[in-house]
Length: 430
Image (cartoon, rainbow, N blue to C red; front, side, top):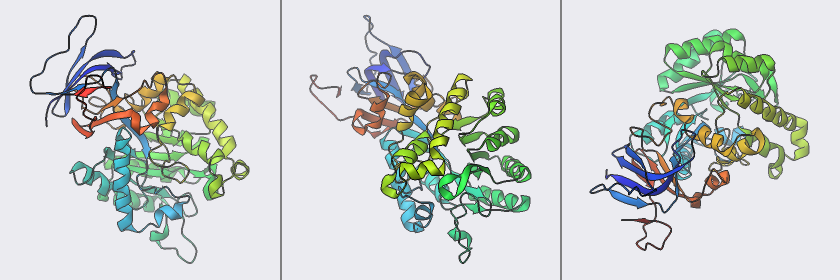
């Protein structure tokens, strides 16, 4: 692994301050030096290093996607996702993992998988170098109840293989389910604490008993596993705080008590609202029969309004809101994930700086790598993006693959910058 030195770049280091002009030296898989230049200060010479002259390009930490479904196959229904044959499905996941890295997502948190071991197999294949992909935390299937979100079996086909989720009823079935996924080697358990209007169970409904939820959390923690929840309803959000469920997906419907509980425990939870799902389902899914008239009747327009107000309130209270959520449906295709950052600015009121921090510095703790990931600082892992443009001026540049000049993960280029020999070009290597 050759040393790499980025020179003449504008460095966004993840600390929340304005970018500065400088050099960054990568040795092995770590950032070895970060030096401010300019004002008469020369670049630092490093013998034998590959030199990347950024010509003023924007250098930032790799991004972290907090709510990832590699096995969602850009189709319009749960059945179309789950019933993809397993051989094709694992190949799909491998291709999508590469797509995320292509777009600058160097770390991803699995939020649920369509078949029991897809996430685990993909994570392991990334780790051993069999396939290319971001750092990945593998999730279970969505744990649900009979008739709940994720139970897609039919009366004449009640077999578990026809269910999108893992269906349990009662504390002992919950305990067995958690133990099964722990045996498979997941990093986290996903539990569906609320409904989802598109499946027929309204988002404000909640389906588990407190005893079942408590059993899931207790058993998961005894195996050293994290728990994440699909939690749109107010009751489900409160259960996440009460039971110690670290990762809360959606959190659309809140009241003052729920917000107070979250604020009191704001360093113990992460929120990934998935606004793109609500926005695109409400207004951009007509091709698949989900016209605005239909989705309004489903309640999605009302939920979108509630979710925006909830996220605004959480932002004011300093609760961590991270990008990611339900990309992989036909109207939220994989690779468009950076829309979340645009929506954070447009709808939630974040500054572009906050939006960038949500995808970088806040992602380190989400990956449980808070001391080594999410910053351009000495000693941190070399997950680095070189961007043609300024996301602090226009956050949408991160949606354009052509603007992401280079992607480095763990000190190696996944996408190296194009080599140019003329100093008249945008930037050069030597």
